[in-house]
Amino acid sequence: MGTAIALMVMLIGMLVVAGTPTGTLLSAMTIAGALGTFAIWMEPYRRARFFAFLNPWHDAQGTGFQIVQAMIGMGSGGIFGVGLGQASRRSSTCRRHTPT
Image (cartoon, rainbow, N blue to C red; front, side, top):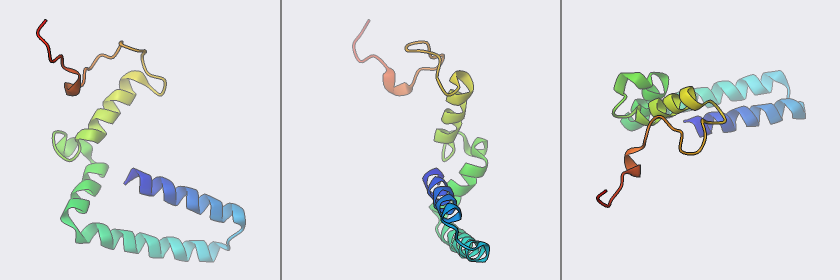
């Protein structure tokens, strides 16, 4: 979802800089929006991901898990992070496999 939005924003920006007429841009964005909404609504997994994108806290342990974890990570470390080994949360994939 995020990649598609980023690509659409870049495409629209390039078309604006290239001098595409406003009416053409509005028509294209309307058609793309309608097709995108239709595509999202027709598949249940896309609909679930879209609603998780809008409200990730509704299902924080299911479809919204990645978004919630990203928000927690950005909230604690910002763009530049807190430093190597200084994280307050440890991932479940970073467990030791040997006894201590």
